[in-house]
Image 1 (cartoon, one colour):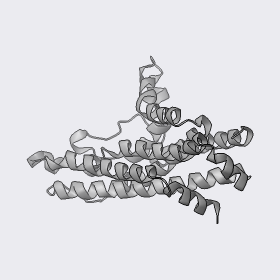
Image 2 (spheres, rainbow, N blue to C red):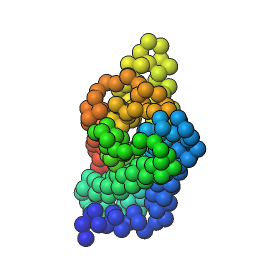
Image 3 (cartoon, helix red, strand yellow):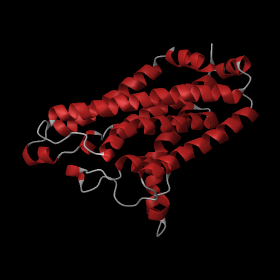
Image 4 (cartoon, helix red, strand yellow):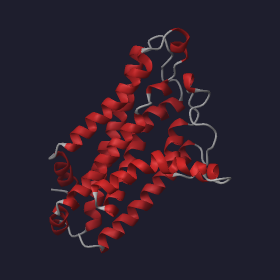
Amino acid sequence: MSVITVERIKLFSTRSPWWCMIIAAVLTVGFAALTTAFLKGADEQRATIFITQPGAQLSQMVMMVMAALAVTTEYRFSTIRTSFQAVPQRAALLLGKTAVVAFLAGVVGLIASFGAWGIGSLFASNADLAIDSGAEWRLLAGQGLIFAISAVFAVAVGILIRQSAGAIAILILWPLLVENLVLLIPKAGDDLNKWAPFVNGNSFLNQGQDAGLAGAEAAGTNFAFGPWGALLYFAGWAAVLMTIALVSASKRDA
């Protein structure tokens, strides 16, 4: 069997990936239902596709947790040693695991985002939630890309940290707290924040979006790049971190 086939079987042999996928999908769709179900009159007419995606970031966190656990669990129970004995090329093994997890996260991101859009269209039937522009397609279909890249990011952190609690703490606190705390740095905060990786991931999704009830534009104006440049920058962070993780894994004892 190929490395990818083996990693797929290993991943689905436990319950946690299934629960993470279900929770991620339910969060995205559930928040979309909450934000659109009670809109009436003018508020409903002002609703846009953007307001169907408030749960996407939380779902992204859930899939990052799943991705990290895919590797930290093996380190915890020392099964990674058996895996390395079966596949001496550690980088190939870990890249196979990363590919499986990233693909799965991307699929969940797509299903969740379009599911949220669908449920939002159902509840806010008088709103114009048709997908009419490239920016709107980017917001919905782009969730798959962001989820997949985030999963690569998470696997890399898992390889480096090796402990589930530590890896999960970093993956949650980094985008939700650390990148926002940078804004508090006097004078340089705004300039530094726009170079943060997850800020750019969100920038890819949100640039040019009509936020409707939330304001004129979803993501403000503090951009270092355009949408696709922001995506490449975010992917670059994931690639560099994964490279460091692979080098570390090849030199450290399992």
